[in-house]
Amino acid sequence: MPQITPFRTQVDVQAWTPQGQHHHLDLMGSLKQIQTSKTTNQPYGTFNLTFTSQERGHGTWADKLPYRTYVEIRAGANTVGTPPILMRGFVSTGTQSLTMPQAPNGPARQVVISGKDMGVILADWQILYLWGIDPMATYLNANTSGGNALGHALGVSVQSADPASLVQSFFDKLVATAVKGLQETISPAIPSMTPEITLPSAYQVNFVNLQPWQGSYANFLDYFASPPWGENFVYDAESGPQYILRQTPYKNFSTGSYPLPFGNIGNNGFFPDVTINAGDITGHNLTINGAEQVYTYYLTIPDMASSQAQSNALWYYVSQSGQQITTQSGARQSGSNPYYDPERANIWGIRPLQVTTPWISAIDQTMTPIPAQMNTWLVNVFQNNDLFSSGTISCHGHQALKIGRYVVVAPGKNTVFAQPYEAYIEQVDHMIDIYSNTATWTTNLGVVRGRVRTTL
Image 1 (cartoon, rainbow, N blue to C red):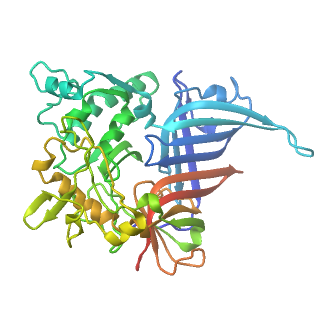
Image 2 (image 1 turned 90 degrees about the vertical axis):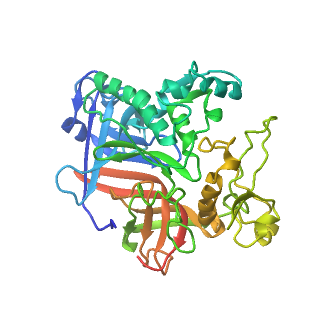
Image 3 (image 1 turned 135 degrees about the vertical axis):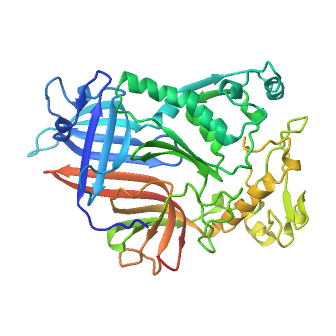
């Protein structure tokens, strides 16, 4: 697994404007600070570039890097040659500031260029599709020969579409077109965005929920990510930005292993763990999970098949003879799924994990094992949620520290753990200060599902 070691930081930034200008070495001469932030909880990451406020040519960098300038930020530790990509994206705003500190310091001027990574394409581009107000009427129209459903508009069959093919069609018809327009308008250097889809083949598409739609591309995709068992984010690979849509690679608490994946997808699409030495830790602030993270029931799905469209909770119980709907009392039996723990319920109360998802056809859910299989995965992952910890870890910066993977902290004098500690990275904030041609790189990690383990 990748391991953080003492390093020399190397950075490189360049930009292409919509007016056809390319900035590289001239830009690096004025750059003083780089900040990037990326999280699995929003469709795009952000960056800030801080420059000295010097007039060079036609104004400051706030004038030269206008809205929609394409930027590539690279940074590496102990790298040779061009450092690896840290973030690529587009300028949103340029701000010039002046502060007047007390003597003997003089005026302090700077320019801050703010932007978002290429996930901003998913947030800024919009879908407007309103076939009808009544979802059931829309569904019936979509399944007639003359129907013009959103699935048809994307070039997929309503009757046979699966989530992976639907999202792939979405990228082929909408996202790829948006990126091509930017390549033609700004620069061919802008890479294409590719979907990396790792989903169980058993997933279905519930077109009753899907038909009327308006909003951003990002909202459409986030709807299909279906947290907590699915996640989606943009990953800046060297070859180009990748849109990751996958079953969330959460480990369980007791063994630290990935539970039986729903649909037998294996560990495809999971990123390798990264290890941080204790000496590279500068601080951490971790809290044991509280009430908002614990459940006594799992996977309660609104009953879309009800003629009154009421949200009736459906409880699934898996026995040796197969799947059957059960009551709360039936869920107390040993081996039940979901398992209702009376002792914990007495402490926490009844806490269902209730979700609405387009992955499952609610009309067919009582005739297939999909909800029960999915629920087995949820129980394996979340049954000890009250024991996990979450918070922040601060350390020396490194290019291997990215969202969507586990970080392992080695024990040592800079930590409070006598054994290795691992946690899932949901947010990464990098800050690189550049002074006199040297760079200092620090990173803050937002982590969840932290647990102590026995070995590195």
